[in-house]
Length: 313
Length: 85
Image (tube, rainbow over the protein chains, first blue to last red):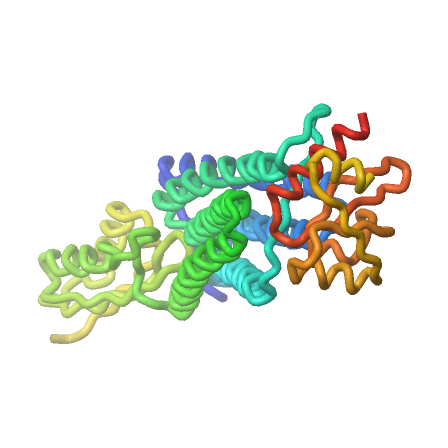
């Protein structure tokens, strides 16, 4: 018989926060799809527009993989998957980190090509309601339509990711940030072109691309570390998870325990691991171990699966 | 069309005839201010230089300008739209 990991009993605050996060992700998907449709209708087949289009489709990956990860993680363990599916969000995190790097590379390559070709962009007039106005203004309006909601989504997602310890969503927030930053670079670029600085567009894009690549490398490193079972760290602030030390302290404080060492790893939203305790008193060990496990689970819902082994002194 | 633009700008019109490729190269080198020919919105030259709005509604023909000369391009677009009224 295989022993199956029991389902996680999420506290109400987590369930609420996750529901809210899922809603934000779903709205962002609807929004991005709407921009893809609008661009598709408006753009025809210019190369620049195709690139923007591709960026938008890349931008769909993070919220989708967050939602998939959140749903799959809730599946119960089966004999085939005795540890359950709790790591699904970590796979989502890796996928999103790769999407972020892809976005950064594309932006970087485009900016460098533009600078090397050294062809000043030409933005002429366009007719709006019978008047000739500078085409740059239309572009700025279109950019505002893409930047402002993305900036809002990025901020909301970042805030929503912290209470549910969801790295996929946190990387999604980084992608939204990359999106609106590159839009911001385009705004500076259009204004620069208007004032005669043809290189403004590509230079701003280059700076943003470097920032995105830096962020993307950090995300990939983080995602791979989590998958390989690194020490738990908090999402966002990226400091050591206080639970590791707290656990060792609380176990050591039990009257039958002389000292305790713990080794934990992240399994998506929750933590698994072992504690090795040196027992002062080995009487009634099974009952005491069960009691300690119960105590820990009551205090820290995220410490989902703690194996306690006992060593002689 | 070109004469009308020249008159509006009080400029002297000097015409040069050449192939499309030579015209585009001259625009990029800053030797020409404007090129006219069988250029429309699908022309492969549009990536290399600037282009005005179409001056003829049925043929969709447009004029080419030196790349990055946005003030000049804007002036031409205004003249073209004003002329088509």
